[in-house]
Amino acid sequence: MGRGFVDVEENFAFYGAYHSNPINILIHVIFVWPIFFSLLLLLSFTAPLVPFPLPPLLLPFQEYMIMNWSFMVASLFALFYVTLDRKAGSLAAFLCLACWVGSNALAQRLGFSLGWKVVLISQIVCWTSQVLGHSIFEGRSPALLDNLFQALIVAPFFVLLEVLQILFNYEPYPGFSKRVQAKVKANISAWKAKSDVKRRA
Image (cartoon, rainbow, N blue to C red):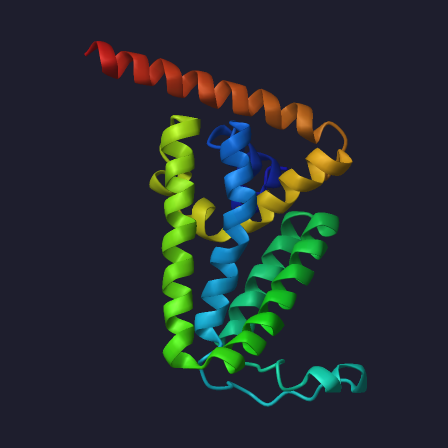
């Protein structure tokens, strides 16, 4: 707590205030990680940056474990997520690195001429679905318009954290969910009050 942009409680409360409708939450659960994966897929077509020896256990996968820009981005996301929360962040980090390996494998299978089209379609479908989720079900503009960092960097972790909370009642620390819900309600109430003032003006 109290760590600015790596404060998981503050950031998750902000995220939750924009994702309180169950259908909108489901839409984000389905489409947020494909956005991340398709970004890595595009970066998988970049050249290797540095040679890196792999341990013997990973040698069967070496053709897909290329140290390109896809690896760099996946690693930065992974490290950041671990700073947010060690347990859930470690799972998110594993998923990031799995996406890196998977994106390299898919890039080799598709080739660039087809791969960039898959990326484009994926990005359009995923972003459009989320915008519709906000406009139709949430009734509030995406967090992207108020906090670009939230929408592009932290969203994959918070989607995972939300799933862990729903399925396993997971909390980064005791009292986390209760504190977050209080902040979410306060944020939504403030937004509704501000919206009412604008409508009356």
